[in-house]
Image 1 (spheres, rainbow, N blue to C red):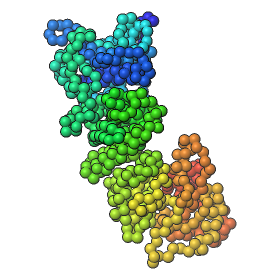
Image 2 (cartoon, helix red, strand yellow; image 1 turned 30 degrees about the vertical axis):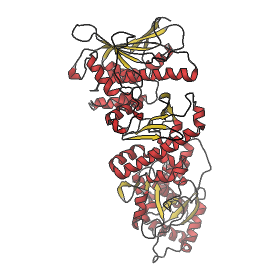
Image 3 (cartoon, rainbow, N blue to C red; image 1 turned 60 degrees about the vertical axis):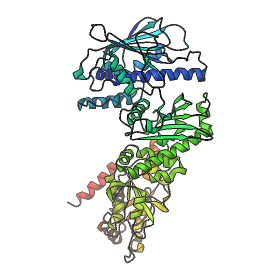
Image 4 (cartoon, helix red, strand yellow; image 1 turned 180 degrees about the horizontal axis):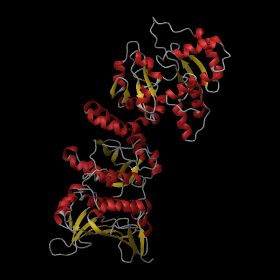
Length: 627
């Protein structure tokens, strides 16, 4: 194939411009990104030989760094990073470098632009978080050349080159060795802009030691390709070292390497199991949620090693989906090096590791809750929604998940645990009350809350979409049943109070049931209302309207569930409606009033009117008669 000049994908072009005119003060990270990419390529080659039978020499897998033109001799300053890993085909080069083939591109650009507008100077996490580390080379180089050849292929390699201006050239490279070589034509040194001389040996050593010391392959500083050179990194597996021998900074750099998150982790978890089945694990709880936490196609899972040999990057079988934010490494001693995903799903050792990791993560979060409330508050803010998914997927872990969960409450602006709620329960209260809704404001102003507020009962405020589902899966906590105040019948009346006799309102209730038969299954008097005229409630075993809407949005149409209309017998509208009905049941305005009463009850809880135009017309006609 001949040389081509191609344009970057639009999003990639925008990203390049942000890198060229970099807003980041810490430009050193470009080298960490290149080394990380090289390390991945070496892992992939070793794995392809192990699992796919690829014929390749893996006896000396390594990364070389070569500097050119350093010092004051005026030579062209270059920095080259090369590996003898898996390499890329021409098509892969175009796909991986000419485009950003990853979901979340729009979010990335938005965040980068926001950071630029805010004159942020310490936001390098945005580079690695979105998996576009290669582009960071344009922070320090005015031209980048990449030469690569895919292992196991015959013929030519590929040469890619760009000045980061919106286009790149791609051509054949007949003599390219297997692997990838990236050469940066460095910009002039400008220390005021934190742009150092990256061809200087001391600077290269400093960056490698700081960011990449733990890389499992030797990183060699050489003066020519193929030289033995000086090995710059220790290559020690952090998870195999005692915690007392590893600094927090080393852990943080390793976390950044495997997660592409440039913030420090919230918590570090070390595990070591010995005996019949041995494994070591080093896990991290991030300090913030990744942008794709709730995207189906997001990469998730832990890195799996067997006896220090990398096996796979995203083993979902090692951690349940509701803990998908946990990053880390598991190194098992007794698994086959040739293990497949299919075998992983059924392997009893993997299942045992999964159970133990899950238990350890949940207990660590519980320790944060009791020992470091500030850290726990950060954790719950970022990952609480995901954690509650476990109440649906793991019934055996209901108790530990509920114990580490927090919920908004009417008792305070601060979230509460269920244990703290139970401690505050009123004398004689046997149930934990909650109400679901779209927002705190909507829940607090709901008619269903009136009697509970008046009589001092605390109610949990559940506003996450997952709350609508898990409350049906969890029946109790600490022997106390969970109870929605918008479902079933509620009677909070004090013994000395006598509710209005149902018989006094019997004819009106029958009339309203007849007129609203398409909308409601029953009309009855309420003990949960104190100021509103009416509200709608669900039967104890019916699904909620929000859940019904959720199923419809997912394309799961089910039968429409009728609800119960409850009336406040002490409200002037209800008593007036009864008097009007008693004066003349054939009053032609009464059916319209019934519709308005139902509509206002629906609107009060944030529901959607079936025919908003008709409701508006009825309301306007009724208002016109009053002025």
